[in-house]
Length: 431
Ligand SMILES: Cc1ncc(COP(=O)(O)O)c(C=O)c1O
Image (cartoon, rainbow, N blue to C red):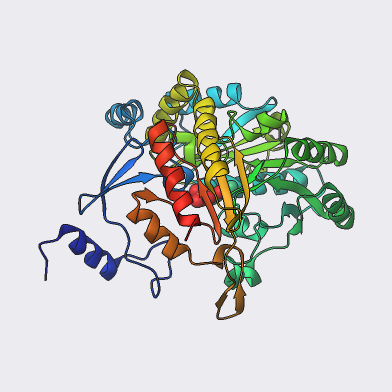
């Protein structure tokens, strides 16, 4: 029976047919019924407005409904909506590839398009595995990743990610990967152990997002680059979250002044307006696949590879990133929120306040929580649902990672909005 309340109606219909990501439907609150979004603000069906302090899963870069991106997509849809990218090409894809090669760290010269962060990572792993085969070293198949690493939810990405807690049910089907702490001695020891089985190293440079916004120093990244170079191992930078200004430079690798061998980009690539991702690789990777044998080709592709509307969005977004100096604006927003938090957080209840560019995070010192398998830690710790509920009451969308509270707002966020985000985080931390 429809009610007079459109929000309740939508939520009831949703409950009957939808299955949400990362959601325990037996436990969690009803989803927010969102009817619109503009700038940093989401409008809910009941008329409330909520500040999107996490850029809707770290994607929305400029702000919701950015007209320049929306207009570029609309014009492209009328000009050329979709065409397969095997045996065909189009201006948007070539132009975007040219721009990414120009703007990304030196040496990345080939662009492989796919759909989202996970597929960008799958592509990087598959390129490296097949590249080793072309180099007559097929035994090199084990990637090293950091403890807590998160690179996406497809099987390859899960395999190199830290299984705990997201991937435990699938661990028996995942392939072998090595894991080390973000510590150079630990990493070199693991690589020594792997010897000729090592395929490469993958990292979320400077900030490990899903692990709880854990931050590394630029020096660590430089040292890691040197280790990979010494050993002839490809370094894959997963900049799915950190790309396009989130860390205060265009790419996190730029902060450290390093160039990876492969780089994965998604989320902010289109300004967060539509799904699209890319994997950038060096000429030596591409060249190793050249042969007179069709079987040596890179057999990977998706229906919507290099989708023209996505390319149009990405080109418009890139223009805005440069015109508006988005990295600097995000850094300023991050610094403002950080300053508030540094002054106002109660050290008795919080720890490890940290900032990198537009990403600000701290840990809540919370009593231990339990789940069916004992003490809940990491992502499953604390009561993030209660924190989310309280944040919405304060007019801010926050989504804690376990006991880690963080903000990563879009670049359009005004100083007054940044202050409201900081105030909500302080209120949440005060219980
Ligand atoms: C570093 C990193 N890599 C990969 C992914 C997966 O991206 P997607 O959710 O678009 O598949 C994410 C998603 O949060 C991420 O943070």
